[in-house]
Image (tube, rainbow, N blue to C red; front, side, top):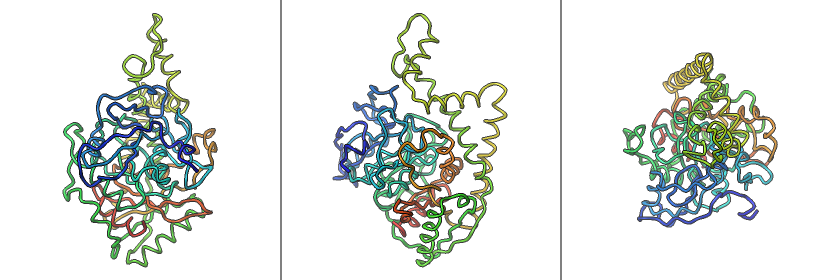
Length: 425
């Protein structure tokens, strides 16, 4: 399949490096919700089809300074809202590892570009699995960093308390090298911090898992596709042969994680996207004497169906009389998820599960059933609720389709993730 058929890029424009460093001679694709000075940043939406940022995101500055050549902005689900990269206003992206199927989302363009060799490396963003899902579906490596490890300055926000920018690469070591470049404190993002043990991640990709203890939550295997479960256990057997030990653990809170995640994410999205009204940002609705009608027209024309759905649901969850019933309870469930992980990590080094419980959907399969798309995130969203790091690595295939294995570690345990993942990829 030729590159144009994949539709992995919204904009192909080369940005030259500003310095020499660890990424000299490497090409990097950047998800289209990360600001690039002078190059349009659409978020996969008609609302921002012509928006050209006047500044670079911190991660883009760091890429350039490290010697990377940016080769374009990658396709994505509109404003990051989707699991398939089919809600983009610029058309769906094809999966180069599974023709006729979706590449996952919302960072599907980034994963497809790496899988097809259109870029050496890529940046995606992960709000509830949006790096790990496409990494799994496209047979590449994706890391969702600990919340606060990578600056979000210049990222067009979907859900501020959940999302992180992270790397997608062919191998764990290459993903770790990219993570080293973009991570670390940023004075323009008050949520960032320097990990106690620094950001030397690539050196941990030594494949040494002797003595590593792996917890397998039974809840994240229940209901998963049979072929995916078999491939997952085969990968764990491989780890055991290399000296790792695994044991079953329980995370009862994950049963409510999807519901809690979508209430929180949609609520934050409804607030964040309020700025796109055709006056502050977005296409004009054409003022005709009534500002409410002008705003409504701009949003009706600029937003796609999935974005409108999530704005409406989020606004409802935050409305008077329903805040305590939905949003407050979702935050309680979020605290429960974090507590479960904390207790589990007292006994194991990492938690492992299939990244996705299902194989890549056929193109168009999930568009008429949003609930099916939401439930596919069951194994990834708990990580974002708990603000933990996770990695998806290729575990093999089931019925000829890529399968990803997810490792989760305690906060700022990226070196442990890289070591575990490098034993498989």
